[in-house]
Length: 151
Image (cartoon, rainbow, N blue to C red):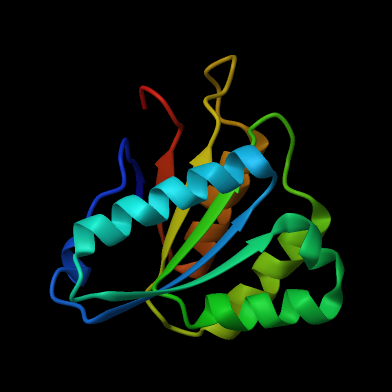
């Protein structure tokens, strides 16, 4: 499923959860701020009874194969994977490599992929959005997209 979200909100499947595993990765300081805001909103929505286990990575760490493998293992057991990126360019090759490793390791696990993206200037889907839609379809992921202000 591919939906656009405007604000972080609680998904039905986690209403009664005691724990939620979240893995997030981001491109730069601006996208890191978006990840932090998303996570804070999610934790507020889930409430104190649900423990959110967070693993957060910056894209550049995926240049090291060892760290890429660790992050792929974390994503493989996550309930929610968040990718925050700018729309202007496609994802770096090391990020795509990490995504492929993650998909190979996740098995049949039901995972939600949240894409925190900048609103495209021309209104057309960006290469990042198109790629993540393809990843979601291939990996059996629910894809939720947040295009920032006014989405």
